[in-house]
Length: 184
Image (cartoon, rainbow, N blue to C red):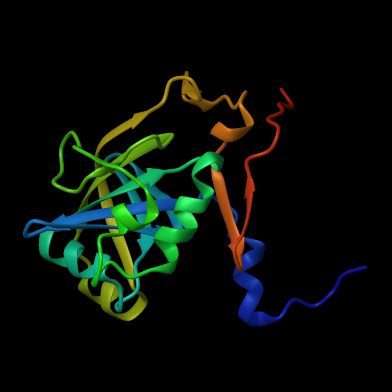
């Protein structure tokens, strides 16, 4: 039997891709925020989409610097991810508050978040209409790396439960990527 889904919560039917930590930096300041709405957009050159609300401190830094990193955290980092998604970085250092550790990136000025599963370093593709109206940022991926213990040969291989990608549902609830299977 099918049940109606409240339209304000309809996004939750699709929104179980990996939660990301968006890191940014500009003018000697840095920040990290959690984002559940991120996805791939294109292959060549590789591009991603992420929604970053107008009211966020991260957005200010990204608009100044023109770059950001999508860090893919794991289940072991769930508490830190929730903290990074619950506070503003305007008044305090969210890296310190959350316990997340910044690390240098390869190609952009934004910091990586230590111990994540993977990193997508991005330069903003300017789309002022989409950014202002929909809070939608397009990033061209200029560097990407992943922990080869969980991502190799172009696929995820999760063998350790705490090193599975993290997925935010709502209200502090997460789930981790489940068992992989093949039909071929």
